[in-house]
Length: 125
Length: 170
Length: 162
Image: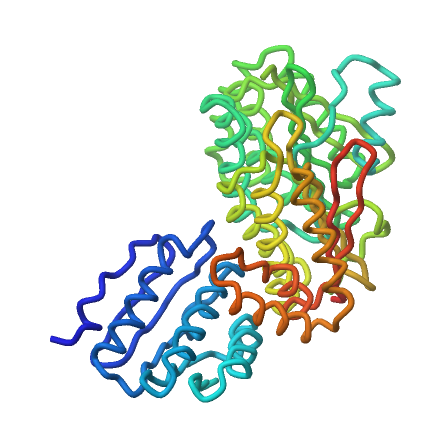
């Protein structure tokens, strides 16, 4: 059983995270809670470490149904991008699947990609 | 000062019979018919966070009936203003729109009847509301505010602007 | 259709409430819904939602405790502009941070400021994100203005074009 399939999922009323092994994650709902890092930061970190442990070449993160987030939640994606950048050639490509009609996704992930270099890919649909 | 505040201030200065409202908690103006369901959901949640359970129910009921009446009868100038305020020991809910003199007179007459015999008028309106005409529903709303929510009701008018205010001790 | 009401000085929405996180979702969604149904502009409603979330969060997080610390939210609209204003009583340390942030932000265009905020967040993983102000300017396309009032309260006004 892959490491990523064993990552504990967060419990949050307005948000759902679904893992489809071996290398896909989907997020749905909204994140507008105070300090989402406390509830979700650890989960994102575990997903990152599991991806490394599984030797993934690419992890797909589908956020098309994540319709609204606060800026503290955007920070979580910044952190994740930083971890992947630090992992370098030993890491994986972090691919975000986004909906270009959703403004926060259009603006934030474009910036992340421009900062993340080769470790970040963006599929804007 | 908003238009509603100005009208109420002049009314208070003229009559002194109804305690003046203080700073608003909620003041919303629409230039078309308000979408009631969403707004009333917000009002209900706000009141639950602000007031005791009993008072929250009374304020929500009053808000529902005032808004429903305003939307049902529309507004000549397409303006609707809802206001919720506290001053000292009183909570005031008011609704402003513009209407025709005949409607104002009908409201005034109903309020006089309500003031004289709230329980009897409430029972009569409840019975009448079971009839086919939708016009009867609007008078039940005022009767519910007076009898169920136990609010005093006041009518202020200036030209075609009408403000119905309901007030109770906090 | 932006408001056709004759006066643009009166707010269309005024709300007063305690600086509690529990109010944010309800206030945000009511105001967003009001914009969407009143103006029939989905884009404006979504932009307003971002501004409401970020300004309310800041106001709630950094309000000084006590009876005098109620927040006031106003929404004004006319054909030329759409304005959201939050009045609060922030703690003095946060106020100075906020003023410094705004001063720094407005030296850059919105996109550059947003990029700069992301770089800072990436380089300072243990510090607060502080992406909200830049986000309002870039994503929501609202400009920000801060007024200090005589009674010690602070009013942040976000202004955008409809």
